[in-house]
Length: 122
Image (cartoon, rainbow, N blue to C red; front, side):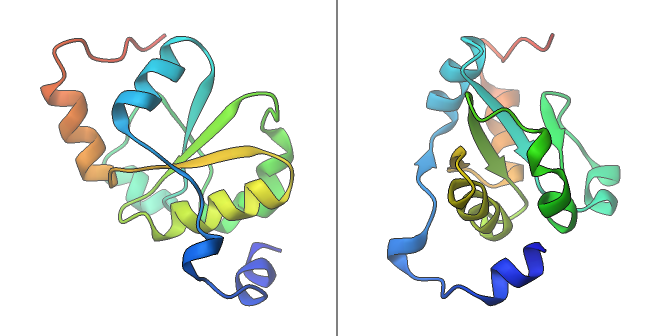
């Protein structure tokens, strides 16, 4: 269970997930080399969501991670990056190539709004 994973590791600088900027994510996403996984809980997503993100709440990641493709970069995001970092560490420890979006959820939305060439949703 993800709760056991969280209990069994000590968070330190060397155990954080690699970061990726909005610009790097956008480029990889547009080349179909990355997906965005929103690990916020359902009640948070119900308030505001981004249609390009796959929603897997942190509380369901342990049970659902096997549905993710290990051949593509997985970029995690949440409200403040803490859960995204834990989710990324969990995914990386299970053989995925995970990175954390450098921006918070609000920062990501701001970048989408101000971007002259927004990501094209398919």
